[in-house]
Image (tube, rainbow, N blue to C red; front, side):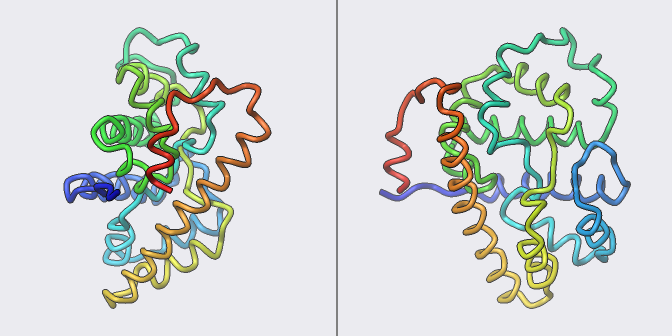
Length: 218
């Protein structure tokens, strides 16, 4: 069975979020967890190369998609009561980007969870969990959860070496090959991390509502 990937409008939103993320990094936002060595290389990118990087067909940042236990706690968190009057961390650009990213993934997960998986590496279970929550609750959680936003695969210098060199090349074929490799890494490694974590934390997780989508994807 074929699955519909991200539409051009979905990828346009990915680019916009990536641009905001890179701008926040350039401004040394304290709300973003990024290794110093990679952060320095990202800040040194020229405007054209930064634009090419932002156009990668996936989110350069992560919002804890590979941490199911963290997100299972969301429904139990007390709400702030007013999204416009949140905690102090909401004044940081990184926190606002996290909220926008989560809201985008919420919308995409409701419309096309397979596309959400491609752009974020999230499991279909996570996409279903996110889509099933009220939007207000999702955004409120993102605005008040410290350290939610981080650089994707921050500990993998090889991944970022390829993305920051070939992935920002002026040669379209070189850039495309690097992006394909990055997406493959995103999908395969994220799935592997998820299954390893589930094995150790299974007692804390409820049974997923359905495995049909997982079987169709495999």
